Amino acid sequence: MGPCVIFQTLMRPHTTSAALHSGFRSTIGWRFIYKIYPPILRILEKAGVHSGRQEFPLGFFNKKYNSEDFQSHLRRIGFETALLAWKDTDEVFGMRKLHNNKFQWHIRMFSNGEIRGHYEYAPEGNPIYHIFEKMLVSEKDFFISVICEYLEKTVSMKEL
Image 1 (cartoon, helix red, strand yellow):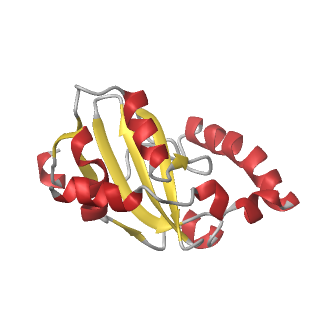
Image 2 (cartoon, helix red, strand yellow; image 1 turned 90 degrees about the horizontal axis):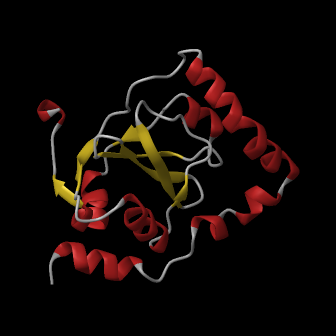
């Protein structure tokens, strides 16, 4: 059994991000933020405040699967749609998995099949640190072990 299968087996019994953060989402303040913040981000993106792609490429999507298969796999292991996030250039979808109610693994798939991911403060865990990207790290080993069957190959920044 390879590392991909072992890790996915360990990830199966999980508590979803939504369950972990039900307290956040049930407060009036966070319900308000979840409602107004995404449209504000889209306006700022159109104004050119954010463009391009964040760092940390993981590889390219294996074409024997489709995007829905990939998203279903991510949901099964506790990822959810990343609502409070920039939409990077050519992003097809972005999802996140909360960790310790303070951090998150954030993964994105792009129209050219590229997949990128990073680990950072969750907006609910520390909104200021999240906005100013006080900690944005690769966690490539984690991502590769979770999505390896959905990748054609891994890449380094130099290869892009």
